[in-house]
Length: 336
Image (cartoon, rainbow, N blue to C red; front, side, top):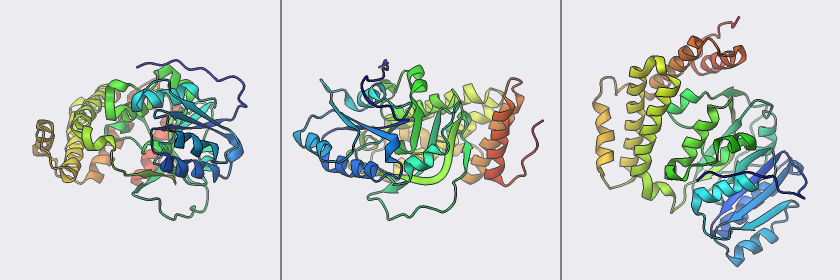
């Protein structure tokens, strides 16, 4: 489904909208809203709740949350998960948007951390996320967190962070057309990749959000389709971002898909045909190499591909070199 975007009239503008797509989990929604209320720069935020369930208890949670700028929109009909994400994007008023699922939370320094790295030309800023059953007691790290570019070619491995860790430019989301419901449980991964192809995707090296592993998540039921779609996306990344290294790029795609398949094999008992085929990628030569080596190799290939492009802006090339040097410890060469 493709969507249109409009700024809602009559709402005081803030640079960031925290949008929560909710569906019949009011107690978790209460915790998500409390994490927004605890932000150190709350005055820069407005909050949007798009409700796909319409429970009276959800409305009470929103009314009692104590946030000064919050809208609660009940969908006139069920939109489903991806459709509800898209309504969040369509109804957001801020120039920047983050989607916070109702079972996830933001740490108090989330807005402050991201704001330091938001600037013209950047399409998205991501932070690191804790993962687990319950948020840990985490103090903020000292000092200003560093950031690097996360180029589109790196999506051959994975996306940089789970859902609550990404803040994006709303106008770029409009250009993309929102999340593609046809991608099912992989719609977010595909969307982040699309973002990265439209400008710098900045990755902040600070943990500022929490992603909850909870019952009923898509992975439990859709993981075979997600595994298939993830491999297709990796092959697309090779075609679009590593055209000079397609053969070795396809090797890396199989390498990472086999790792993904192994993770699903450990979590679930089912053995669908797609899992068997993906696990067979372990038989390709070199598949036993450490994942860290494959990651460094991918970064080197992306860097080499970008150097080969004559139209590559110097500033983007400098960021690519800086990110590679930070990951590998290799001294950054000068860009002239």
